[in-house]
Image (tube, rainbow, N blue to C red; front, side, top):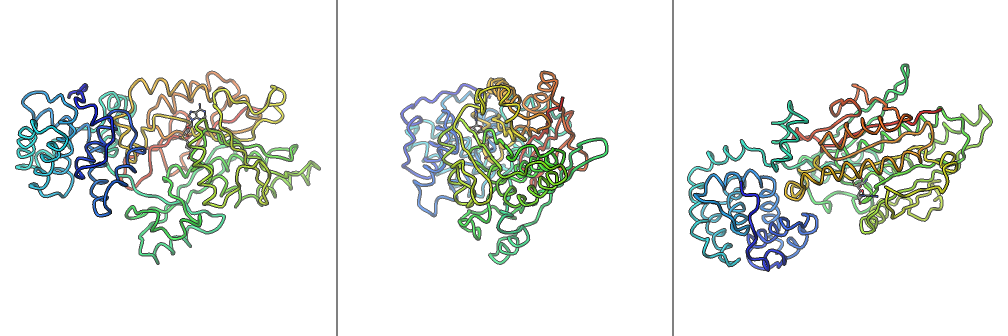
Length: 513
Ligand SMILES: C[S@@+](CC[C@H](N)C(=O)[O-])C[C@H]1O[C@@H](n2cnc3c(N)ncnc32)[C@H](O)[C@@H]1O
């Protein structure tokens, strides 16, 4: 496979000009991704440049080509008599192959329109070659599809690492990663219920299924605590504009496994409250790396729903031990990207959740959103202050390689490099080391990534425990009906076409001295 194909027409490829036929626009979008732009930043410009009737095809063509990108590139290399170096020609051919092998486009249209696209992007001299290769494939698409499917569609370094990490699951995993991911919904239980929303969907002719994920943590030899995540999976993905009550905040789109975070941290918090002596009258919670606020919003929904029970627990403890009652929950959310923080505000506004004014709203929850670097940020100035005013629980949804969400962001397969892994692992360790001293003794830290690489996950946790004598891993037991148990934590793999993304979860507790 050619790894260093060059873009000879830099003006075309660096400048995302959105004119020409649908295929030309898709080719230009793919060239922009190969030059480092993320799918998230180029998808809207592409779709917005098109007539309504063309958007569906452009979207399918772009996503399908990306999902099978590396496998198509390998197939292409096996088909060409001599190496094809020009990025524009390779990209055009990959778009042509995706139509013939994975989309229901008539052969003559796929071939003719792709050759015309090559001419439009000023590669008329490659028209003959493109025509010949696509015709060869069109004569026996099943044979070439089988050949293409046999290969993984990942960069070689990532496939190698996955084989090291998940040899047993490797084939299913690499195949799973090139499939589209299902769409899951989270119902805002502060205002509705999963059953009620399921009914609303049925009335709107949208088929969905209720999914329940159970989680259990082992808090002591005698004591386990359980919680359930309830989500809805749509039979077919749809635009949020078709979802009933979406704009009024009854429902959000969130991956199934992403929906495990808030119930788990809530479970830890509930337990901490039960065993605490009720010394504080405030709970301090931290969502580190919070933007765009998916898990934060879920947590706030649960806090709003659970608040009376949280306070009840605390008040009983206070009654028995004549200690102060909790009056406020102070939730701090930090992220270092200002633009992504804007999206937290938008999300919370739609969901009608407490906004960032650091004043306890009428639900007794004060939210403080901070734009800062989690590797250095300190909530309190002094160590003693931290010990007293540290956080009761910390949710750390860490920056990661996002290799667990390739199904939703197939551009990751092009953009991510092996060097990114090492850098990310270091960043994660720095964030962990900076936040840990800010956790109260007896407090919990939930570490989450959407990566499927052990270096970022279970190995990162093992290193952390080695560095910190006061850290204990809390077992996520076999009663969890999700993920694979690791030495520390559990790993979800996106193998099953009906299942959620590749998330990792580990719960740590700070030892009470
Ligand atoms: C996995 S995403 C968080 C997703 C979010 N928790 C949610 O559920 O919507 C990781 C976040 O970490 C942020 N981030 C990366 N490096 C950071 C740092 N050094 N300090 C603070 N935030 C950082 C990124 O901007 C990104 O928003």
